Length: 271
Image (cartoon, rainbow, N blue to C red; front, top):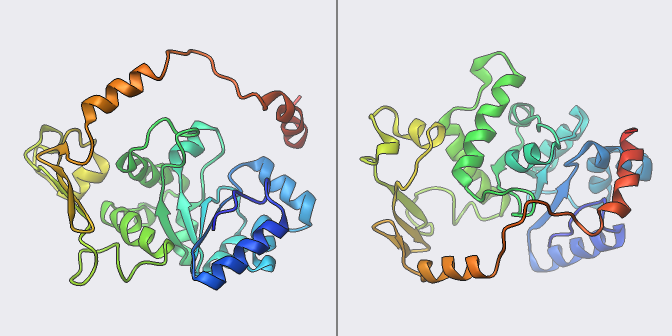
């Protein structure tokens, strides 16, 4: 159940989603406090933070994942840890849109479960999860000068895999290579030029830029990539169709921008 966010959805919609989620044991997801404007509007609308409001509604919990969470105060972080909610970190779209840098190290230190995401293609021109993991890891090195607090490549892999599975309430099925779990795995060709010369393979995977290095992929035991080639679709035909159904554009504007922009500039105190 995924109401977009408190800035776009009514309390009644959130309450209805909570009821359905509880009835059918479904996960909950929403975008939360991605921008400074959303933080200010939430305070104006509810008289409290957006996180506190969702807690009062009963939306937070172990089956809840929240995208972005850029503009949270320490009290909000404590609520997420207490309710065992998951933060889905979308560093590329947050940078792309100038939304800000989520306090990821604070989340980890508080015991909040964190996963990585790419966000939608409307707000991130790349859907490369490894790229999101790399940027989402090293971006926070500038927020804390104590390098002992920085995210290591192995911690990043765990956040992306097991952290994501926990956020989906499926950690008993996914997230680790464990007997009894679903066979979801990717094999990388460690002789690929982008992964040479040899050092730490996990470090190369996360901090490098693996290109054309995927050899095989299995999803729930079904092989979907073999010898570097996708087996489930005709990639050549897909490329041709995408090319024909699109056109080169240098300037694109949302039809609703003129209606929304004055309110945004007023909230943010922009001239």
